[in-house]
Amino acid sequence: MTKKSTAPRPTDPAPFADDDPRATFARAVALGATVIDRVQPGQLGLPTPCPEMDVRRLLGHLVMVLQRVAAAGRGQDPSTWPGEVTGLADDAWAAAWTEAAHEVRGAWTEDATLARDTVLPWATVTGEGALRIYTNEVTVHTWDLARATGQEPEWDEAVLEVSLTTMQEALPAAGRAESYEEAKAALPPGVPWADPFAPAVEVPEDAPLVDRLVAWNGRRP
Image (tube, rainbow, N blue to C red):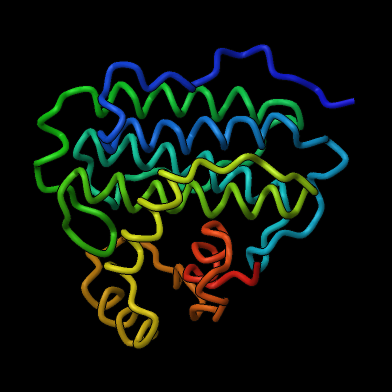
């Protein structure tokens, strides 16, 4: 029987218009909460589509992503951003996700955060651009987690569209290795680097939107 979290869920994008990138990100986080809620303790050691990550480590990575989005919203230097979350109890992941989601909400409340320059480890973009990039990361890792644990979530088509459009603009299918080398060379001292995406995988043009998204991110649907 699936264990349900009793923690408050970060599912309400009400303060923002539907097309506000904060609302889109909130919907991605809400679906992540649903998938995390359904992970069973006995599944934490299962492999995932992410190389060298089992389910437990992927959960830690996902929570870290939210913590980093909050850090970006506060304007923190990337060299001070948190690393992957480890050491949590088997049943603590949903609560950690919710706590990090509330941290994101607080860091991005002011409308001005969307227009200001936001320094990421590999580039400086607008706050809106950063949120769109991280909407993709949360969504794709939610797919990784769902695939690893046998879940079939109900994907939000608008979130998928934003994610795919953003990544097609930011991450061409060709020349990824070269762009990674350039980004790595430009990193400030103390900022770690790991190539974030494998080469794009070919899928039919009429494949489901979620399949096209994860394929662009280097996954095999």
